[in-house]
Length: 208
Ligand code: SF4
Image 1 (tube, rainbow, N blue to C red):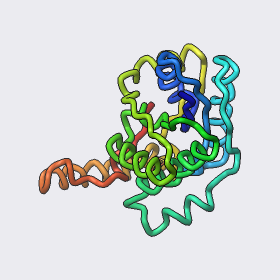
Image 2 (image 1 turned 135 degrees about the horizontal axis):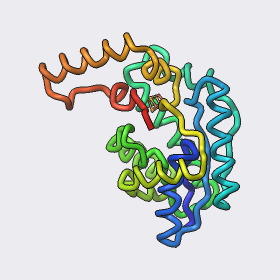
Image 3 (image 1 turned 90 degrees about the vertical axis):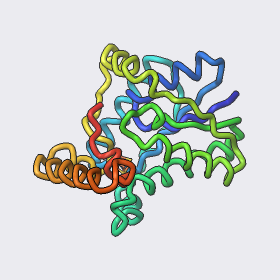
Image 4 (image 1 turned 45 degrees about the horizontal axis):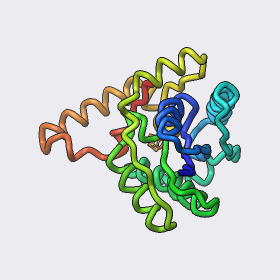
């Protein structure tokens, strides 16, 4: 099948690409991530993807438009839902592009990360697959988590320390905020159990 693979970054692409190629699919990439801030980080992640493309012969379209304003307009006042909104932004555009290009199916490297909300990603992909009339190819790429990391190190790729948005950058480096979040999680879990957490917390700490 012809697959359009949404690419969140170079390191997270390695394992999904090897699985899809191993299954005999023709894979094209699409880097579309207006959530990544600040600008120098955005450029750095594109640089890592370009290195991966050069080293593996992977072809991908890279949207180099820096999406700070658009992303913030969607998320401000909805911060608690920001990961769901972030998935909507990236996955809807990927499904739309897959349909436009006549791809047989689309999928995303976000399904590789142990830190993303895997179930919500599946829901969103299925939603946009129906909306644009293109198949969503589901694979649990988390199975190759360590393999992907090892290969990224071998290739010398830049591996980012946080998920992407400016909120996740603060959560990665602001010790006071991390302590507060841990405390809130403990309180929430003791009241209602871990299932009541918001998506925002699920992918808050990206230590890839
Ligand atoms: S933490 Fe990650 S998935 Fe969630 S909004 Fe930020 S960049 Fe998007």
